Length: 181
Ligand code: ATP
Ligand code: MG
Image (cartoon, rainbow, N blue to C red; front, side, top):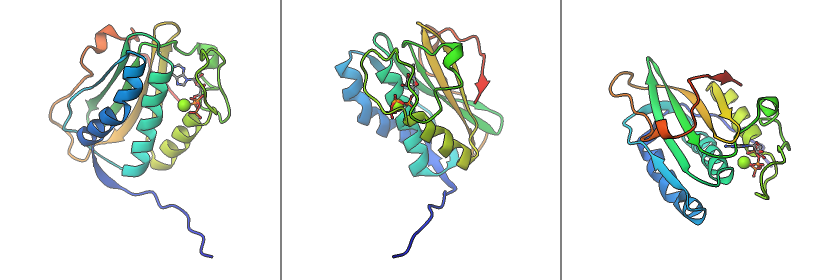
């Protein structure tokens, strides 16, 4: 039998299109918890692997919903020169500074999840996929107020409008601190 190592692709990925798919996919999960789930409209096109980028976003959006009990989840894009941050904000339980380094480890959970099931694998997969793709990932959080995960992506056509998640100011107050993981 042939074994095959997965090749990571480098293709234009339309983030607006990705957002539309995620909105449909995760609306039921958010509705079940009475959370608002919003995606900022964007025309950003980035260079990535469509399958892996979608899987990264799925993990971050599903975590955001899973670890949030009131308020909601906001997803947007912030352009910065040649790159764009894909940003996932939530108003959830947050991650303590002392747990910051551990959440990306495999089979690692924090233990304040309030019964939400999981294997502690999602973020370890996100970290490894981002490393393979050369996408820096950052996380910032205020326990009890919320968390933001950011993935830095190369823009295909830099310039144009900068979009922010609508109502991001109502979300966690993060003062722009970014901790690269
Ligand atoms: P799996 O993703 O394998 O179903 P999981 O969600 O527990 O399980 P990860 O996605 O790797 O695993 O996350 C690891 C831990 O980090 C979680 O158990 C949770 O404690 C914490 N965590 C992840 N995302 C958030 C978030 N948005 N807000 C608060 N805590 C989070
Ligand atoms: Mg998870």
